[in-house]
Length: 325
Ligand SMILES: Cc1cc2nc3c(=O)[nH]c(=O)nc-3n(C[C@H](O)[C@H](O)[C@H](O)COP(=O)(O)OP(=O)(O)OC[C@H]3O[C@@H](n4cnc5c(N)ncnc54)[C@H](O)[C@@H]3O)c2cc1C
Image (cartoon, rainbow, N blue to C red; front, side, top):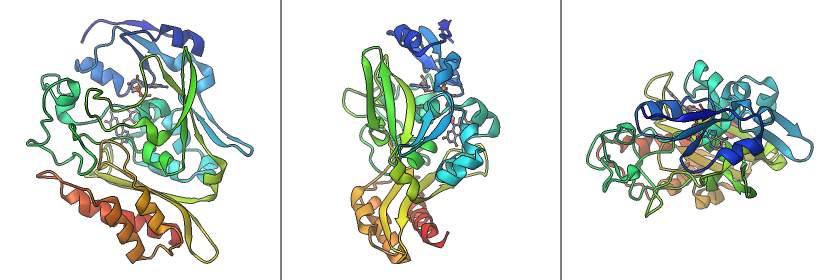
């Protein structure tokens, strides 16, 4: 483990001032500290955000939807009966994320920009492409948990359970730096690493996520999150599906969103698949046709073809549950 200095500012402005080159933000530390211990991340300084009170908690804001502070512990969202009534898909997505202890420590901002779980990336001794090497070892190696679609030079998968659920609710993230603030769709936070960038997230050095916002309109939709795991606890998604839609009195869906986790380097969404579902009764045939569009570009590796079959069926079940709930 390399040496680093540590600061715990009390105000956002102070934190932003400290975020210079070689400095990394620390929230719950459940991901970052492991990476530092294993030598995958070598910050010169950690800026601990947990002393900044204003970034914790969530609220419904009249006419403006739901605002969630970046430092809110995942457990606060998972266990809130009030949030379950407003935005059930969020507690549902978190129920099977990590463990109760990790959900107590882990925060919303940290969960959204946690690094991927590829074992080649996380092994200090492996010079994988994402760490500056010249190839992705998953392509010819152990690849049962890797991407089946959307990968370029790097076949890792986006690990967050919260991200697909919030993207299916049209969430936006607010990002601040000492130069100002910007708001982007949460989906735009995720990059399939390629070219010179080799980045998983669009967040730039010196920037922090301060909050996530779900628009009022999305609260009128039904939502569901399904996650397939290879054991029942402490497990990342093999495949997950977040689906939301407005269901009319005639039983037809509008404003449909379907986002997959665990299959691509980013939460995976294909607008043409969602378009296909708008106006449909979400019957089996419509759901499977949409799944086929979502997965049409899939090119599985040697050991992960099962993800395509699994995703297709999970998409069907998630969408069906919106009408049968
Ligand atoms: C055994 C295990 C199992 C897990 N299983 C799951 C799972 O099933 N599903 C799932 O979704 N997750 C899972 N996780 C991941 C876990 O949810 C994350 O580790 C946690 O959410 C990260 O939050 P944190 O606050 O601890 O982040 P930290 O570890 O403090 O930080 C993680 C990253 O986020 C950055 N960061 C933190 N806050 C901000 C901010 N406000 N702005 C900008 N950057 C920021 C940090 O710089 C760092 O790069 C698992 C983790 C472990 C260890």
